[in-house]
Image (cartoon, rainbow, N blue to C red; front, side, top):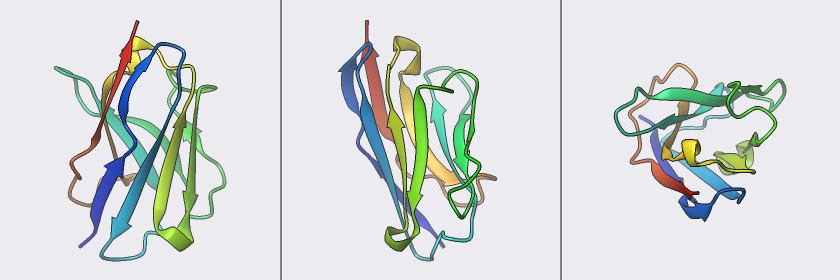
Length: 115
Protein backbone atom coordinates (compact mmCIF):
# COMPACT_ATOMS: atom_id res chain seq x y z
CA UNK A 1 0.00 0.00 0.00
CA UNK A 2 1.23 3.47 -0.85
CA UNK A 3 1.37 6.21 1.73
CA UNK A 4 1.35 9.80 0.46
CA UNK A 5 2.62 12.78 2.42
CA UNK A 6 2.06 16.27 1.05
CA UNK A 7 3.88 19.38 2.26
CA UNK A 8 4.77 22.90 1.28
CA UNK A 9 1.47 24.66 1.73
CA UNK A 10 0.97 27.86 3.64
CA UNK A 11 -0.46 31.35 3.64
CA UNK A 12 0.54 33.57 0.76
CA UNK A 13 -0.67 36.82 -0.75
CA UNK A 14 -2.29 36.91 -4.15
CA UNK A 15 0.37 36.87 -6.83
CA UNK A 16 2.74 34.84 -4.68
CA UNK A 17 4.22 31.40 -5.17
CA UNK A 18 4.43 28.09 -3.37
CA UNK A 19 6.03 24.77 -4.16
CA UNK A 20 4.26 21.66 -2.98
CA UNK A 21 5.92 18.27 -2.53
CA UNK A 22 4.41 14.83 -2.31
CA UNK A 23 6.55 11.97 -1.06
CA UNK A 24 5.32 8.44 -1.59
CA UNK A 25 6.36 5.43 0.45
CA UNK A 26 5.42 1.77 0.41
CA UNK A 27 6.13 1.24 -3.25
CA UNK A 28 7.71 3.02 -6.17
CA UNK A 29 5.45 5.38 -8.09
CA UNK A 30 7.73 5.64 -11.09
CA UNK A 31 5.41 3.67 -13.37
CA UNK A 32 2.26 5.60 -12.50
CA UNK A 33 0.60 8.68 -13.86
CA UNK A 34 0.49 11.00 -10.87
CA UNK A 35 -1.80 13.89 -10.17
CA UNK A 36 -2.30 16.83 -7.89
CA UNK A 37 -5.84 17.43 -6.70
CA UNK A 38 -7.45 20.07 -4.55
CA UNK A 39 -10.56 20.45 -2.47
CA UNK A 40 -11.95 23.78 -1.40
CA UNK A 41 -14.50 24.05 1.44
CA UNK A 42 -17.91 22.90 0.30
CA UNK A 43 -16.65 21.75 -3.07
CA UNK A 44 -15.77 18.45 -4.68
CA UNK A 45 -12.18 17.37 -4.99
CA UNK A 46 -10.85 18.24 -8.45
CA UNK A 47 -7.84 17.33 -10.54
CA UNK A 48 -5.40 20.20 -10.92
CA UNK A 49 -2.56 18.64 -12.90
CA UNK A 50 -1.20 15.25 -13.89
CA UNK A 51 2.06 13.89 -15.21
CA UNK A 52 3.09 10.70 -16.94
CA UNK A 53 5.62 8.27 -15.50
CA UNK A 54 8.39 9.78 -17.64
CA UNK A 55 7.51 13.37 -16.83
CA UNK A 56 6.39 14.06 -20.36
CA UNK A 57 3.00 15.36 -21.45
CA UNK A 58 1.84 17.12 -18.31
CA UNK A 59 -1.81 18.00 -18.25
CA UNK A 60 -3.35 21.01 -16.52
CA UNK A 61 -6.84 22.05 -15.65
CA UNK A 62 -7.84 25.23 -17.45
CA UNK A 63 -7.99 27.20 -14.23
CA UNK A 64 -4.26 26.68 -13.49
CA UNK A 65 -2.72 26.36 -16.95
CA UNK A 66 0.12 28.80 -17.38
CA UNK A 67 0.49 29.34 -13.63
CA UNK A 68 1.20 25.88 -12.18
CA UNK A 69 3.88 23.36 -13.17
CA UNK A 70 3.86 19.70 -12.20
CA UNK A 71 7.08 17.71 -12.12
CA UNK A 72 8.45 14.54 -10.60
CA UNK A 73 11.65 12.94 -9.39
CA UNK A 74 11.27 9.18 -9.63
CA UNK A 75 14.56 8.58 -7.82
CA UNK A 76 13.06 10.36 -4.81
CA UNK A 77 9.57 8.92 -5.29
CA UNK A 78 8.35 12.52 -5.19
CA UNK A 79 5.98 14.69 -7.18
CA UNK A 80 6.04 18.49 -7.09
CA UNK A 81 3.65 21.30 -7.90
CA UNK A 82 5.10 24.75 -8.50
CA UNK A 83 2.34 27.30 -8.10
CA UNK A 84 2.89 30.86 -9.33
CA UNK A 85 0.60 33.86 -9.65
CA UNK A 86 -1.64 32.44 -6.96
CA UNK A 87 -5.21 33.69 -6.69
CA UNK A 88 -7.61 33.65 -3.74
CA UNK A 89 -9.69 31.05 -5.60
CA UNK A 90 -6.69 28.67 -5.40
CA UNK A 91 -7.32 28.38 -1.66
CA UNK A 92 -7.86 24.69 -0.90
CA UNK A 93 -6.32 21.58 0.57
CA UNK A 94 -4.00 20.07 -2.02
CA UNK A 95 -3.47 16.32 -2.37
CA UNK A 96 -1.49 14.04 -4.62
CA UNK A 97 -2.41 10.58 -5.79
CA UNK A 98 -2.26 8.34 -8.77
CA UNK A 99 -4.31 10.03 -11.50
CA UNK A 100 -7.10 7.50 -11.00
CA UNK A 101 -6.95 7.98 -7.22
CA UNK A 102 -6.17 4.34 -6.58
CA UNK A 103 -4.42 4.87 -3.24
CA UNK A 104 -5.61 6.13 0.15
CA UNK A 105 -5.53 9.90 0.39
CA UNK A 106 -2.89 11.60 2.48
CA UNK A 107 -3.61 14.43 4.87
CA UNK A 108 -3.07 17.04 2.20
CA UNK A 109 -1.46 20.43 2.59
CA UNK A 110 -3.44 23.62 3.11
CA UNK A 111 -2.90 26.48 0.68
CA UNK A 112 -4.46 29.80 1.61
CA UNK A 113 -4.20 32.79 -0.72
CA UNK A 114 -5.17 36.17 0.69
CA UNK A 115 -6.38 39.01 -1.47
